[in-house]
Length: 332
Image (cartoon, rainbow, N blue to C red; front, side, top):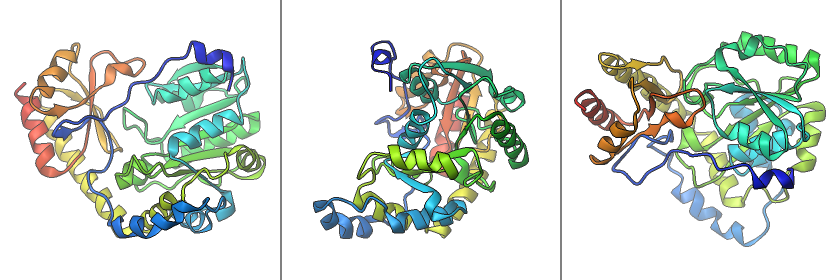
């Protein structure tokens, strides 16, 4: 990180609210049964955790279909993103970043003293990466829900590899889809989070996946004791909760389709492969957001994403909650 950059780089807004109906954050409203696992792991917090987290790495490798030695445990997906950017980007470098997309990519690049080069998300895979130190893509994209097919992503990864440009793939929402991870692909760093699928943002568990020289850089740079013992135990349990993942995926896909169909009668709603929908309300959304908040419904002001001026983003939650949101939006 470039110390001088910290004086000029601001914070990035995110979702999360104490509203009765919180559609501003994209976490699963259901969680696996992990209380007993967490309680059993409490005593392990009295000692330093095993830096290699072997059980967690094995579970993560099974989850994304890679070799355990390619997994680097991190304290959440955000830590994996920061680690990947720190080991690939130098001051004054250029980094390819899609827009609109997750605001932390640009912030982390700027904290390195480097320059984000913004490219429309739907054009990124056609850009020549050779003049850039790193390319970043979110699959599915936040906030649009776009998901390029795996063959296109692999082709772009090969282009990046030929150019000597690492590719950072943020797969925070990929487990809500049936598309396979790029984990283990040469020249690619995959960042994964347990926050979204398993509804445990406070656990701070995630991981990066890389091979070859990129893996060695990550392993060297990751802080000691990065993943606490309780987080590793709960994370291991979650990553092996196959039935929970499948049920969540089916519910989200069904509810997202139902919500989009209903909301499209009044708004322009982007097609999405993620557990959220991007809605163009056609005007400054702040009055609508305030009106919803007065009725205990929180949605994300998507104008905080670069390139969006009239949008909100809403999570896909449980059926009764989704019904409430649709009813209020259609009558607002």
